Image (cartoon, rainbow, N blue to C red; front, side):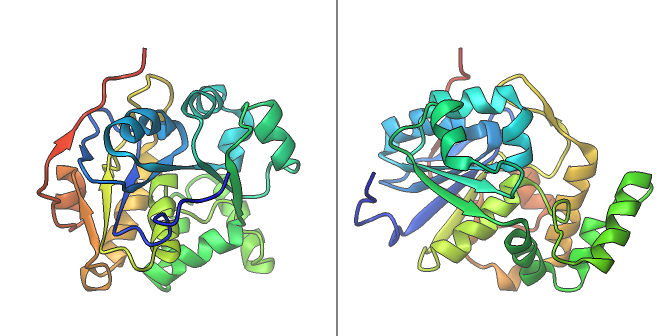
Amino acid sequence: MSLPDWVDSAARVVVAGAKPGVRLPLLERPVLLTANGAALLGPPYRARCGAWVISVVDSGVLAKDTAVQQAIRTAQPDELLIVGEVIAEREAFMRETLGLERTVLRTLAYRERFEFLREAAGRRAWLIAAHDLKSPKRLLESLRLIATPERMAFVTASTGMNAVFYARRRFAAAQEIITAGIGLQPGGHFYGVGRMSSSRARADRLLMQAWPPEQRPWLKTTDPVMQSLGRVPAWTGECFTPAPPA
C-alpha cells in the first residue's frame, strides 16, 4: 500500500489508548496512532474523519495477547508499527496470524524506544525504568542493563506514550499531537480484556513529571486526567466517543 501524499505532512495527529470512554477529536483527515488493542478505534475514526490509521504494538504483547491480535485483525490498519524484537518473522506473522495483506509494516527497536524516553526525561529515564525495583525480576534486569546497555526491553513507559514519541519524531511538522484515552491511571480497557497496571501507570506519571511542559507545547489532550496529572493543555474542539465493539 502506498501512502497518500498528505500523510507525512499531516497538520494534526491523534494518539489513542484503550481507556474506557475515550474521546476522539473530530478532525479532517488526521493521522491516528493506536496503542495495542486500541486498534479497534481505527475503523470508526477512519469512517468518521478519513483518518490514516497506524497501529502501534509492543512485540511481546503482540506475540502472546490474542485479544490484541484479534483487535488488529479486525481493524486492518493502514500501517503496523511493531516495537521490539520478540517476533523474529514479522512479515510472516503479519500475514498469517493477523491477516494483514495490504498493511505497511514498520519496526522500531527496543533501543530506539529507550532513546525516545531519554530525549523526553533526560537522566530520569532510568528512574522511570526502575520505578518498581522491588520486584526481584526487575532488579536483575536492571543490573543486566547496566552491564549490557543495548538490552532495553523493559526500559519504557506505556505503548501509548511511546506512540506519542514516535508520532513527534515522524510527524515533526504537525501543529498538534492530541492524546485520547491515555489517562495515567490503572484500569481496564474499553474492549473488556486486560488492564493498565498500576506499575505502568506510575511510570507514565513519572515520565510526565520529568518532561517539562515547555518542551512539548504541541501536545494536547482530550482526557481530563492527562490534563491534570500530566500538565497537558486540553484540546477544546468537538469530540466523539465511538461505540464499544460488539
